Amino acid sequence: MREAIKNSHPLVQLSVFVLVGLVSMFILMGLVMVPFVFSGSGIAFISNPGSISDPNEPAVLVLKLMQIMQAIGLFVVPYLMYRWVQQNDNPYRLIALNGKRAMIVVFVITMVSALPLINFLAEWNAALSLPDAFEGVEQWMRSMEADAEALIRIFLSMDSVGDLIFNLVLIAIIPAIAEEVFFRGMMQPLFLKVVKNYHLAIWITAFLFSFFHMQFLGFLPRMILGAVFGYAAHWSGTLLLPMVGHLINNGLAVLITWYIGQEAIENHIETIGANEGEGLFAVLSAVVLVAGLLTIYFYATKDKEKAPATSATEA
Image (tube, rainbow, N blue to C red; front, side, top):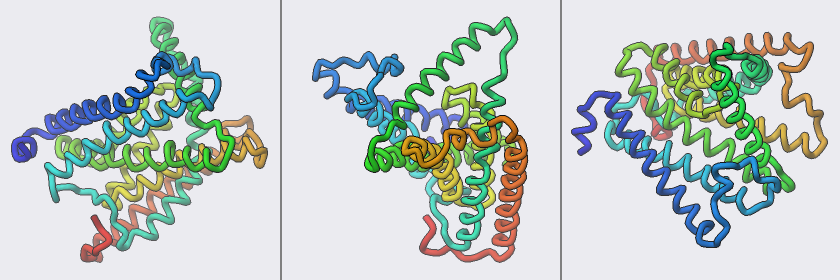
């Protein structure tokens, strides 16, 4: 079976891995829902999460557990199967620390500095309107966005440090690992084999990365983030950088929400770069982002010239 999949076209391989991921996701999510269904509580909240008004409802915990199962089933399982099929035929190592520490520091600074730009693009994207002929589509998109926003706000409701830690795991750590191994660790290399051009493979993957989230009013900034993660993975040769970047992007959202709730910082920090009169912040943020990526590129070029031996810290 392994040889049959390995010798098939990369897009056929991708289809197989995605199908396995979907099946795994439904099985794992089903296991979470079974106790809730048999308790007589029902599962109506799944189709209408906006109906949940109290963040402490049991339904919220079920949704969070389903989110974890979705990440494992849909993203991690296909990547593990991909690694089993491809074995050592993979351009990006899962974790490579040797010679990458400086890149990691640069990327951390880059991602923190990128926040105003991402907020600015999100605000601009959300303000776009489709032509009148697509009014129904736009209403559907905005309805989906409102539901997603309501669910995120419920997830981000935190009363204790324990809630903060749980949300950092749920919203930052798990997606950073699961989504990056799937999109940059599996999908991007497969597209690279098809198109033979790493720029094109990165942007195709970034487009699909953003499309998957089904939040079209934030499509552009999410696609750009996907491309940033893609270049970081390709130039560094490791998934560690995009994982760190993804972790920082999501983790900052959780931490900012926590500190706003604790009244330790002002509300406008959450939308820095998108507030009135903060266009300069977005411009400077874009400059730092480009500079950070170029620095990683030059670090990677230098590393290739040195051609260091593989160390025990790489996997």
